[in-house]
Image 1 (cartoon, helix red, strand yellow):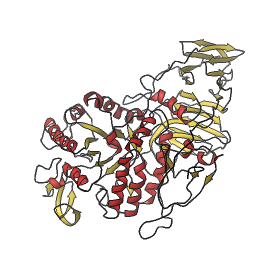
Image 2 (cartoon, rainbow, N blue to C red):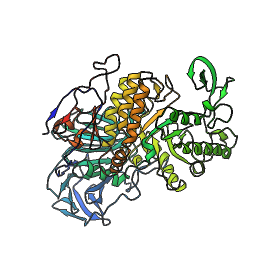
Image 3 (cartoon, rainbow, N blue to C red):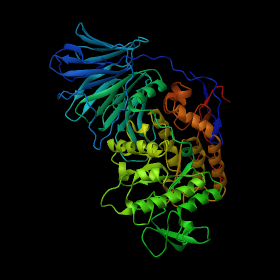
Image 4 (cartoon, rainbow, N blue to C red):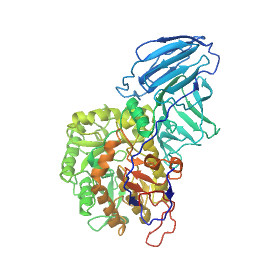
Length: 637
């Protein structure tokens, strides 16, 4: 077991050069899972139906299909209502599996031996007894893992698998489970709760993996519940609100192998373009009216103004500032970052309900307006994107302000970022996948092979092949906002979605200088930064709270820029390896790091240990504080 030290630090980061190479010992897998809750009448026949799949016919006429998607991955399908193997029902249409989810499984054999169905690949052996107990043996090692604890239950609207929970076993996955990443002894909802605070689920994923060397993905868009020894410490109980069984099992050793098995089935995570690692600014600059108000926001002309979405006789904003309204324009935002020497990578100028991106009265005229803004932004090294409220393609009967044409936006105006929101994908499940798949194909095709940069929420298994994830709308200016996001980001990477973020200091609230500074500090060591403006206690600019926040935030934004080669390298690694934000056990596995003891620190790639200040411990009047309980791996000081 790796020894560790606890210490007090007055900073949030330390550089830790790792000399060891993470390696997991080969862990074998044996799984025993009852697939029936009643007498099957034994096995009548085992018959291959193609080169990778076989049917197991029970005496009562029911059929279980085992289909190998690789030498160590298999699908188990059983519909007692007589349905055939199929994709899960999805409305709107979406597919969990990638276009090519299979690898060569090698020679697959299937036979009935002494009343037991025996199926093999060169790497695993699957056995189903007459009592419908499934056993999987890893032929590479001969080791065993899990046993079923109860027969599978087939209800009209729910199927449940119950496994034995082994002592010392840990579980990870489930998607964006706010405030959590290590689930042993816990229960997690595989459900879009649209609850964006601690305990909520922002983007569920019906996939988990175990330290015993296996993973499971439930092939469904229906809600699920995974209980890892919470109700009964000796059992893992898995259920989804569906009428048939359709699951994938992956037999492999360690995080990288199991995540890659998941990526084989559902697609690898996107590698976002380089500009996406810099801070982005999001707000609506085509909708509101500004009037002078002594309690309003201070602008460059030395006057204060208050914003209103209703026409109150004030100055109406626009993207390009062509109507004697420049300081209220989207162009002025780009200028403001430059004037304050703050790095900016991209901007979304329509992030607000009813905003649009032009005021010409026609869709084509509005796209020309967007193109003009895009040309200006790109001349300053900033890319443009759009927020999505409505359909992406022209729709009859919709006013020009809210009309969209994603092809022209990408091809003609140069849009390179798309952000989806609850107005479009809030129902989650197949909605989330359907909403990003179209853009994921349009952006490179019409955008000169541009790498797609899509920011979404309410995702599912497969979202990672198209989009990044943000955790929803929350309130900043509070330590809690930093605290619960640390394990949230860790858990997202362990679930196969390494591209995770949240709004800088929240979309709402703010105006707490110390929390604001700490937020900019720790998020220098995360993939993306979203400055969601227009809803908070103050404007959401890095310099808006004055000194010392302006200088410190600038320093960390520039630090993030300086380590771009490193960040881009670990982002590329995350497409088929470890995530960028790494749980400590991924680099330093032991009993202490596998659980929740290190949930408030992580490795940013192999060389940076990040332990954010996330609470007021002994803070002085200047905001200086200590951070207790940091795990420092031995030999790295």
